[in-house]
Image (cartoon, rainbow, N blue to C red; front, side, top):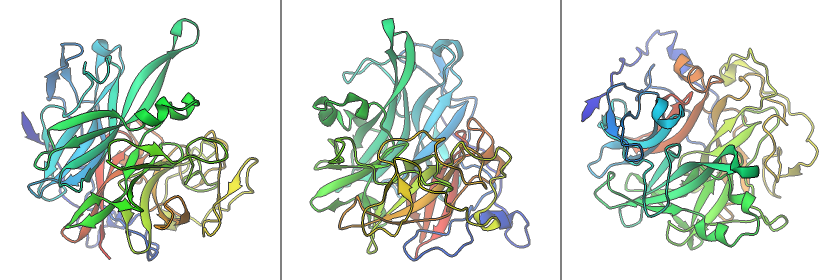
Length: 439
């Protein structure tokens, strides 16, 4: 079953008051940045629907699988030249899943990047497989897709699973794991799942806690015949990963990955962390696949505002507010690597999101999008990052939803007819798009 999601018409640019809001960051982009980004629509490109269903293999029940939320889209150019989004879909699973929403991965395609046709059944979903025995509360989320050197596709996604701790295993928690899947040259619907990206590395680690919460894997790419293709640098593939702080990993085959470790602590090295007084004062999460350029490696990332903010902040445009002052470094912080232009701080352990002061122009906990430049000579060395968000929640569908603090979280990036198209999840509920000219 395939259907076309309903869409509203694009905004009229001339003379429209709302059109001014489309230029989220009207500040002149730095020479290395992708952007500035504007929204070509005043509406999401993909929204939940209440008529798709399938028979869940774990429960054997008829299940509405995307009637609650559709968000966090990975993007790629399909074999036929269309734009494909692989995205996180949630159903309001009700009694069959103990009241918890189940998350699955779905596929949508478009001829223009704005109006999408969504497949009527999910693409990947929890089921009993040789890889592991899963239960109804497992979930698949946060896909990111790149083209492999052989012309096929590689996808990283996050597997969430309940774990039990404490006496008798009575306390429920969630564990997040980066997983890898590959697809053949002419298909984005036929995937081979390889399991956890860090399976070999974590198996030999003495510090199991270092591997308990990992997600958001973004593989380094370069522009190749109009597509973002996985790129080798210094003889290896690289991946920026992490949903609270950003780390690095390397691979020789795009399937098995080894994290880069901090020599002092033996834990995964943090290459990008929180900044006091900024949009990323609470957390930094890897976004779409980063891009290798002549200037260095450009990483678009998602920043969470600290919880130590003002609850009545309006998520105003960056140009509407002065740059926030940066408070003194908190205890335990360390300066960035030598040679970095970024004079802010990043802790070498995952700090609680409420530790640093927030950006006062954003709601506490709000997610916005930034950009960072890393050295191609040393992919762990941060050279520079944006002071302000390049995209932040402004429209009602970005400020209100499952995530009511407001969120734009970017995961998909493609080149389309001489423009960058950036796809993002809005308030953990719908999918939006922003575009920028190639420079």
